[in-house]
Image (cartoon, rainbow, N blue to C red; front, side, top):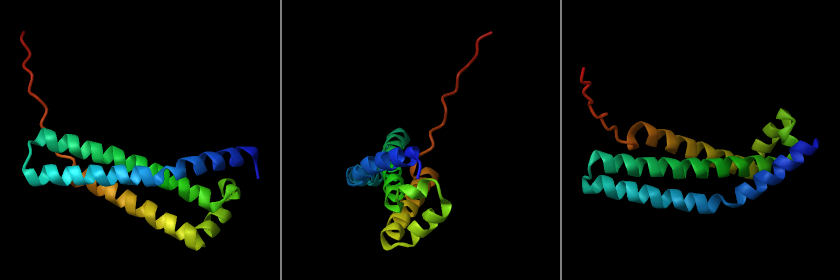
Length: 126
């Protein structure tokens, strides 16, 4: 096991500890987005709420990925077989399914949750 793998493992452990906080922020942002959608807000407000939710999901996803890597163990940073074995453990499978769920939710939000706002038309005077 390399020294770099140990350092990355410790860093991922620290980031992974903040996962519940990031997940709660994502839940709050999603509730706000759903509230704005139900209220029939303007496209600009819908877009702003969708972007906030996307940022919160991205933070939660990064923390979940870090927790997943930390669960696999320090040797998995250098060895793909160790990563595969790590995914096969109950805790590793739990993290893997959580990461996949968050990725799917983020992609769904990017495709349908962020409102498209037309660009303003500018006129050029010659």
